[in-house]
Image (tube, rainbow, N blue to C red; front, side, top):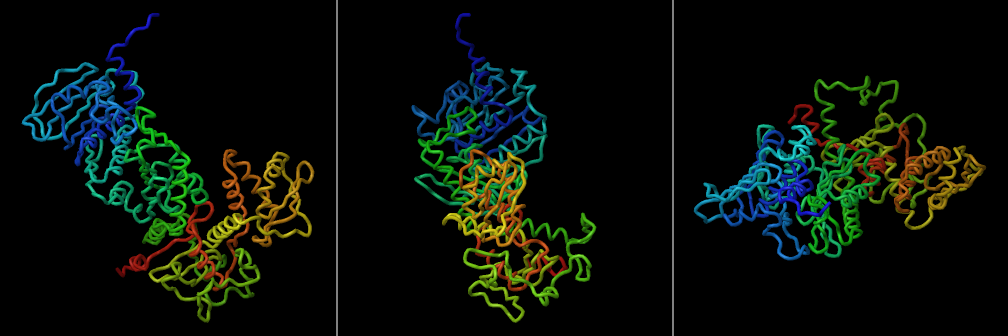
Length: 604
């Protein structure tokens, strides 16, 4: 068949297949144009999920008749001239308006500030009408009706009206986070009105409009720079997480993106701090020289390509981890809110017995501060750091206790002083302005993990030789996997050998963990190794091992603790990064403010 030039309308429809995937894509392109035009107020109206109508009204610079005539032609733009190395605007391809006009009914009405009258142009299914005078306010109104009427096949693939409405809402929220100084109003017959007033330079206030006030209360500020690449934004504490990744927002030079490298870096930064199936909440903005990033990867402009991806990933991971180390031990306010809800009048527990069992309960009694059981308690033998032996009571320097060993809360003791132990697992501590409830197993598990991770960086952990080696029977393939990582396990003081085709002999265990169930540990490690990502680096694999070992080496639920042991645990939590959640991402403590307690009793 002979080669021939396609008609202009068909060319535009082909381009529209990539640029305009759904109504939300069209709305995004039009909002970007409004922002590039200097708009400070943008109103979006939709009907039928954007299928019937999308109307964007802005107060930007506007266009005259000559601009309108060119604007609906392919590759006509005011935003770039000769190169793609210095793109500082959201739009630059000059494809959006002709692409939309080729598949929908497009009308643009605009007036530049200072002009006496406006102009209007229409494009219906790729056919352009001449520009004509029209009454208009300063700025631009773009109206898109019956999207994809000219390409019925594409129309059939659109989702339900509710789904398309939600997609437009999500897109507007991302644009609003990127530009807090712009006022956005989203309305229509297919939705409730969403109004987002300008917050000026207060980026966190705009984020709170989108993600809620809870994020503001649980956010850690990010501000880092490496080799002229700057990273700013906010990351939620690990215990403030969500069930999907939809609450992760990334921006590159002000452009909202959904880049895989950035999202992967966020996951890596929160590794070992968030439960499986849960996702962190973060809003990150990367600023760098436009020449160091390619935004022309795809017509939709949602993906970018960095010249030095390793630098960007390292910056993200390092900055978030530093922030978590600095403030990540904070408890999420959602824990206290949940506790408040549990105490409201009329609350019905989902289980027959309340966890707040009276002291007369025959099952697991509350342990008051006086007399922790009838028999003397052994030292806090599971709570061992490289600088403390198992047979030594832990008493952090500078911490004084009263006659009962309970101590008194002071400004430097953020987690207060232990007052009681509930159900032999939950430590209740009094703080200056409330109380905290600590899960002793989850908290100690995190402390052991951090101690192991710190010690492994300095070399092989000290080990203890078993008088009689433990023999662990396992399937042959599990034995093969364990032995392939024997060198890595040895760095933790766990020495193993093959003992026939279906067994492993454990000869040494980490001294840090004290007396432990080596068989159970090896079986769990076998399961963990089977789940490892084979592409992961040595460091990530070692942290998997440390997390599993920490779980086996931490103080167990059901263990009664003396006052000084509980207070030692609290002080160590205050000094340990990431102690607000265990290795599996669950919270280690819940904080309840005194004002909340008083409200429960109607005192405020």
